[in-house]
Length: 208
Image 1 (cartoon, helix red, strand yellow):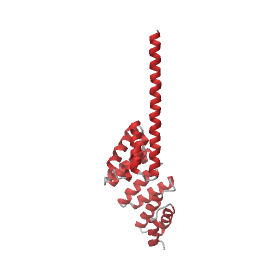
Image 2: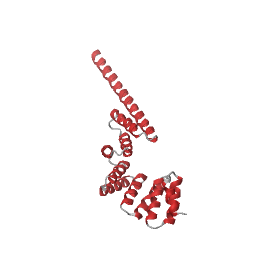
Image 3: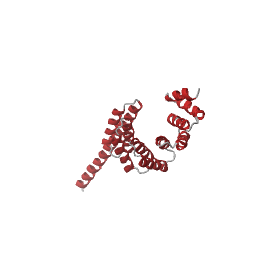
């Protein structure tokens, strides 16, 4: 009986230590993830990617770390890495709209437009409030010269995120491509106000 109690105590103690170890790893992974996010805001993408990678080593099921690492990799043009990260996110959560959106964006960059549209449509189907999915789809429609589609998707992006300078700028460019220069001017102005300096070059050409 004494031996059984001793064994039970040891097993219980080991279980508690195991939980504590898991909590410690999760806390360290979260700290590395937060550090990576800070580095991204400073445009230190390579260092952020290392932080996210270390977080994933501690917690291989850390969905947000894969998502963040893949997003950071778009800035370093590591498109294969982005694809792998987004596929992993979707393995962990097949409904993740942002993962579909980022993967669709990368496919568009690589010239696979049909598959890119499928991913972006899937992102919007999964979450109709994912403003980045509408913005990325607008960018793809701009490349395929679907200017009315661009205007519609940019307008939806702006409805969801009024500070999306890219949406204002792209919508203005689409209006301009349709010959609606006067209607484009307020959008270029707003894009410039939000930090897009290229908008002012267009205004000098069309809005004076």
